[in-house]
Length: 373
Image: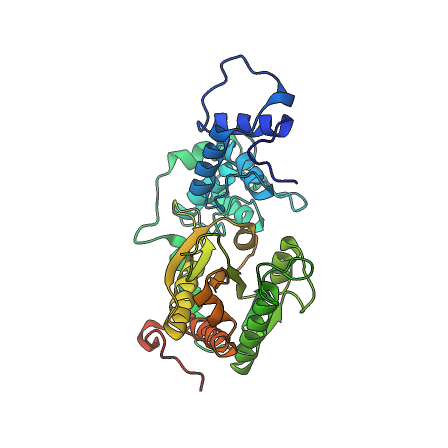
């Protein structure tokens, strides 16, 4: 869809107004609504959209694109508003699904990640709960199942159950990288060149970086896949589907940032998370590792790791991280990123972070010290 922005009018803007009012982000209509065609995307609408994007972990730009519009639609649903069941062709999405997943996880059932998408893992967790509670195990969350969920309090204590489950899985899998399936996603590509720095484009630089990471991980024994070639530009859905079909253990998306502010510079990383509890716990751990390793090896500014609900992180079925390895719009960062030696240092930092993710705590080396034997 074409993003909605300040100054736009029409039925799509009226629909956004209705969604924002239902969430309490816009005041109720006073009854003097001029009509769908005259609904205007004004400054109040932009402010409400920015607030919604901030709370939901989306890119905060004040515009309603495809991701923001879908998030507004999903936010309207509360648990109990509708029957929830797994549909492999069109999986149900919404805040009610997120609430169901969180309740099952708190009770100790493996419902997958609390991402608001009712997939096979959530259905399996729901069926297990229904069997244990003496309900018909049909995988449908209706009135009887909802009453049972509300009657039971939280059963798992001592930490987030998903963190305990994922951490145990990684420790048990062993410290080696041999046979690990890792997907490296070079951002942009094809007609989408990203930011242009002189004769060099962001798409070219991140593809070069992805190739360097691929070589180092392959040398360590991992099986590595790239989501695109040098001149290709697959859609976001194709990139996440590629990683899911490959049954990857890790997904790393590479980008270089740009901003109109002359002060914007540094390295940041992102993992799936809502900022209110639901998150990819291994993804969060990996995002912190890879960011710290890159900062230690390049001397660039550390901008931290942040939870986001971007589809790139949400739709992948494995721990996923987006790494923004500097600002091409900043003269210092740009000089560093154009240097092949710095890109090699970033690639080695990614390798070190991947290796450290699988090491037990007593064997984990200090940041910036790991060297591939």
